[in-house]
Image 1 (cartoon, rainbow, N blue to C red):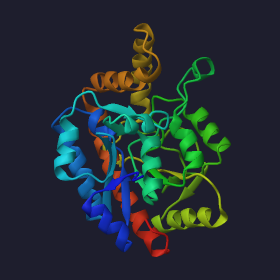
Image 2: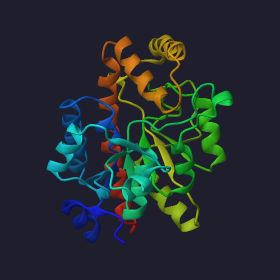
Image 3: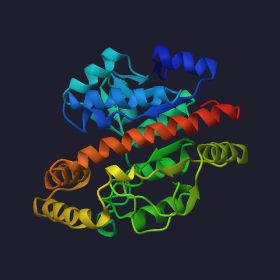
Length: 306
C-alpha cells in the first residue's frame, strides 16, 4: 500500500538529503478567503525556499495523501469547497473513502512522520480550551506532540486557549516547550503570555541538536518551539485580553461548542480588531516558516534527514 505521494520537488529533496519543512493546509482551506489564502500559502512556501529548504504542504486529495503540492494542486485546494478538516481521528477515514481534507497540526505531524520529515512550521497549536474542566475540550495536537517525533515551530498556543493548562498537559506528555530567543512564553498574536517558558534556546543549531538527541535517546514525541511574533507585527496582550473575553462571551451567548469554537473566536476577533489579527497571523506564520527552514537546514548537517 502506498501511503503518500510526494511532489517532484519533495521527492528529490528526500532522496538527496535536502532539508524539508512540512506545512499544514487548514490555514488554506479554513483560515482565510480566496485568493488571499493562495497568496499567503505561496508566500510561506517561498519563505522556506529562500531559507534553502523545501516546503511540503500536506493535504488529502481524492483519498491520496500528498506530501508537497504542485502549483495547480495548491490553487485547486485554495478554491475548493466543503473540504474536511483532518486530525488523527478522521484522517484514515477520509483517505479510505476517497475524500478531500486539509491537515491540522496533528494530521500534518502524522504525514511528516510517514514521509520522514522532522520539522513542521505552523501558526499556533491547539490546546486546552477555557472551561475544559467541564467540557473536556482539549486539542489532539497536544497528544500528537507527545507521541510523534516532529519539531513543531509555532508562535505558541493560540491566545484564545487556556495557556497555563495547555503547558501543564504538554509537560504531562513529556513535550519540551522551547521559547526561541526569550524567557517568556509567547501567545500567538502577542510576544508575551505573562508566563515563563519551560525552556529557552537562542539558536536553530541548538534546537536541531536537541531533536537529534531525543532521537538518540529513543524518546517518543516531538518538540514545540515557541517562536514569538516579530515585535513590529504583534498585538500586545493588554489590548487583546478584553477583545478575547468579548469574543468568548459572544460564543457562549450563541451556543457555539466543540469544533465550532476556534473558527468562531478567530473570526470574531478578526472583526473586533478590524482585521489586525489576520495581518498578525500572516506575519507570524511567515516568521515561523523562516525559523523552521533554519532548523531543518541545521538538522540536515547533523546527519539526520530533515
